[in-house]
Figure 1 (cartoon, rainbow, N blue to C red):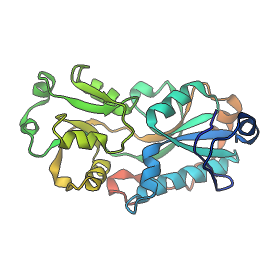
Figure 2 (tube, one colour):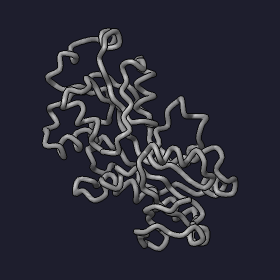
Figure 3 (cartoon, rainbow, N blue to C red):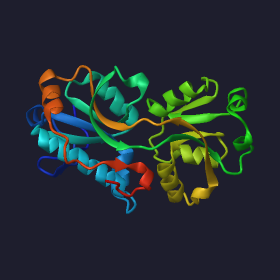
Figure 4 (tube, helix red, strand yellow):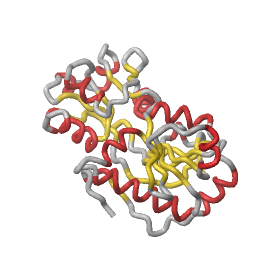
Length: 255
């Protein structure tokens, strides 16, 4: 049941309290869109223009569908867990990777995330090494549990002994670990990494991308077990006129 902090988008009202189960059953809209808690943080930042643009695109699409909906902000691992057991929820900003292709219904391309890179500190000796040297050593790389980044690292060739799986909900945890020399590499999209570093007081020049590990696009996606009536309505909703967003613009909106 959706009994935590929710943004009720049709009415524009915020629910700041836990609701009784009877009220939830009566008030729950047709569909819930699960969004990473990090996005909520970005929406409040002056530099969060890109996050606001992507949410706006999502809302315009959902309103065109005529379905009542709510946006639920929660940590990514919890969002993925909930999606697996709920038949009326969508997931926002899911990378459409080859490994995921048959696991979801891909509803709406939200934006081009650019290249997911393997990132090291600029002063690291590892940036002069080859992929074979990285994979043949004890170098450590971190990623967030249930994220596409973890899968991308495995496809790149890193084994479980190289990968530290992080469960923290802090939006800057990977950058913190990299700058504290707790890991040698992190995966990420450079515009996001630069923003996170800036919030920690670091210039963007302190890191360098050393390899491209994925170039998938972020989507609004549905689980295979989504109610058929909801899926039909979403697939029939026109997407013409929605903006095309590109993260490579460093948080500017490219149309």
